[in-house]
Length: 146
Image: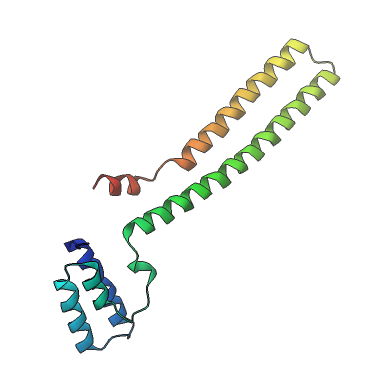
């Protein structure tokens, strides 16, 4: 397969990182950069990278994006279960408060109305927390538009 300018540029960046890390001499770096810039196929580009260890930054951008999405998804799942735990605790507290109010002789209608109102407020709070914590940051939104 033929390689494009972006792929060649990524190869040169990788060579530069290897040079800075001390894996390449100045002459060898210059030779390999020349090979990478003249590369027409992945095999040609591979010849420029021969005998060099792969570096995480050298992976294609798609791998980094996929890893970011996986981390973000795992974070959202964790957040979801934390909010579910909060939701259960709030509901338990509301049920206990309702039971206590009924046990001390509060009117049933008022106690149920207050419990329902408190439940709506609590659920709105949990929903707002979810929306706030899962909203994309403005930096990522700007980066996606480019």
